[in-house]
Length: 266
Image 1 (cartoon, rainbow, N blue to C red):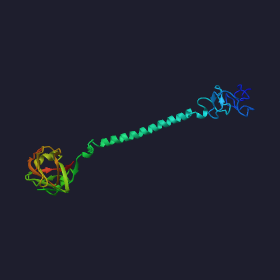
Image 2: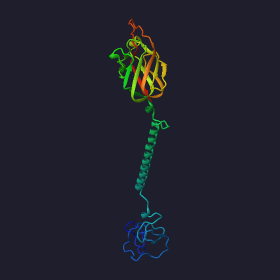
Image 3: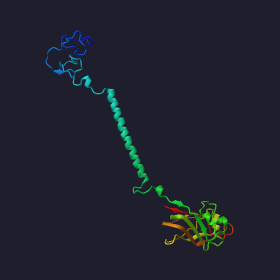
Image 4: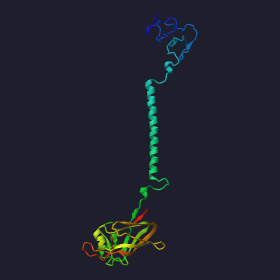
């Protein structure tokens, strides 16, 4: 007889399903199968089948080394697994990259010896609580002008040509000083018409060595660096000066002039 599904020839009295497509046989033997040598066992019902059967004659299950119910994921399923694996590996890579960048950032902020970054090592300015002078031309030319941060205000001694000039700066609490910056008058004409500091002595609280030196005759700011000193007082003694000059027919002034003094720590 022919199978009602695939049309291939089948034995009506042997088994209950078509061995070619697994379609149920009409009027199949309800008692089971005819005796035969077991060459291929069904993985579902363990019925013996000829080796050329594609479906079990006992239950209709797919036969072969990988029957349908044992098959792995479909192509779409395999693709999903592959995509999932790629996504997981990408996430792992992202986490590693974030950690790597974090380590690079820490390395940038450190010089490798547990020291702060270069920006953190830059000198910072210290502001005294008071500035005093041995003499002042007037209230408009007071020593306080040296620490007000305004380039338009200056200090002048009282027409003494800088002789015996002394500047005193006080800090509360004591500060660590590593450099003193002298700011001469930025206006070149006024700079030349006034006396300017040449030799200086910088002293601190008792027990600390003084610093001496010579400034250039320039209206550019000049920095005097020194080993860090912890002090509450800084005294600048003027030891000698550059003489005031006649500029374009204008007579020289008789005053020592200074625009500002900065104190650095770092």
